Amino acid sequence: MNKQREMDFRTPLFISYSGGRTSAYMVEKLLEEYSDQHFFIILFSNTGQEHDKTLEFVHKCDQRWQERYGVKVIWLEAIVHPEKGMGTRHRIVSYETATRFSDIGDETPFAQVIAKYGLPGPASPQICTRELKGAVMRSYTRDYEKANKIKCYTAIGMRADEPKRIMSEADRARYRVVYPLYHWFPTEKADVLDYWEDQEFDLEIPEHYGNCVSCWKKSKAKHIRLVKEHPEFYRFFKRMEGLHENTNNKEGYAPRRFFREERTVDDLFKLAERIPINVIPPTDEEEVGGCNESCEAATPEALGLADEA
Image 1 (cartoon, one colour):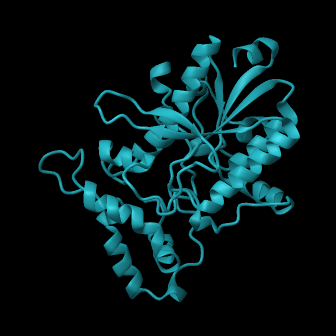
Image 2 (cartoon, one colour):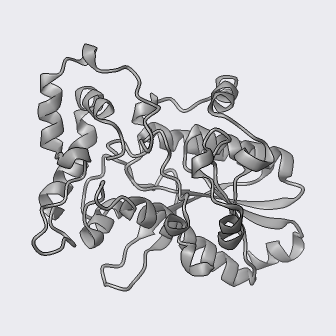
Image 3 (spheres, rainbow, N blue to C red):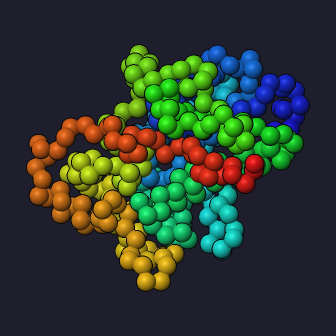
């Protein structure tokens, strides 16, 4: 790593790659148009609850970028220390060894995060993004910066049609964050979809399957549709609810619930039984704060950058 940096005078730039179309488009444009200026380090933090097709898409992108530009995706997962005061670290995995959503055992990164911090959800929304994405990525970037005695910026894939998700200029400088899709080559969602329609492969899942398959941020309509289409998506959180509804909870507080409106997995299944699939809205993508907003490490806290200022 050090020898490579000694011979390469381009500025290193970390890329937070979420595994979706938008951030993949950002990587493509950066590699194509900015490789003469930057040495790119592409980081994908796998939570273990992404759809298998998401991992396939990341793998295909990884192969393409290696063939075209000689740059690979670094696949990361969390190492969670159960001891209080010990922060989450990272381990490097691969497409072949990465955790799948069908793995529901206690040894998975997501299960270990829940065992330490409790169930994520509306009452504790940052747990999963903070520990499974932000802390993991920051563990890697800290090690890289320390080894190379430098401080690097991180590129995040917020688009031009997502202005509310963009940090202020002062915070961008403070936390060393750039938004290429907003400032360097303004891009909207339609541009991204048009681009991938013309490529030899695409992310082969409906939008409501994206991010973690049973993410609490998804709307009620999305969850009802998912329960009917793929009830197996909920096996992991059904198990976690049974084990950890009171983990890391304050005394006297009600048990934690993963889903909105204090719903459990059983509540969602009962709701789905009562509602015919033909009355569920076919799309529900414009919900503010919903799962159409990818769970990228998009804030200083989630990125683990707040203590670096």
